[in-house]
Length: 278
Image (cartoon, rainbow, N blue to C red; front, side, top):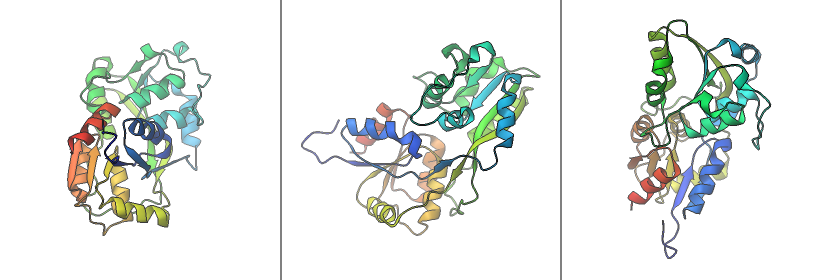
């Protein structure tokens, strides 16, 4: 925890708006000065026909895998502020897969009972597809049907400079493992990820916080790709970042961040990583 005699260190939270509030509040309570700069917008699909079909046939699957809390919210049409939906999944006998605690919380709002949800334990070293696969692999057999609910990139994505993206996609990796063990895997987009429309004030603040010792918190490689596409000439060598996965850390280093720390995607882990920077 920072001393009251010290100036609070600024942390730039880059998560989408719907996901950022708990991080902003938690970091502020830990003594940091926080700034929200969503680098990915989460929007409804323009064409929802495939999504509506997937909703109608959800009971035909043995498991639904949700890549994020946003996937859960848009699949179940949960509005913000979040309130539970009236679905009794216990009567359907279906599993729900999640890679992290935020998605798990959203699944409970969506009507899944705790014993229907498979997700890495809170003490897991990492919350990702690899950790989830280690947990659910014994369930999978030929003919097992899984629907992966994810997002899709909107058409306004700009091209990021070479090296800004971390290539491996954990969701694609998981689908490969499932198919390799004989499962039938379908995918459906529940929302679209878009490049935000940044303001002149946001640009000025971003350029300032690239140079002033602020710590940038990244939870997706796509956020880094959008940042690189938005400000391709920006010098990040004086900037510091906390990345919540090794793949994201690779992307941050490729973009040129001078200091990059990897952290578990939990508030205590992120706080410890920031404080370790001195």
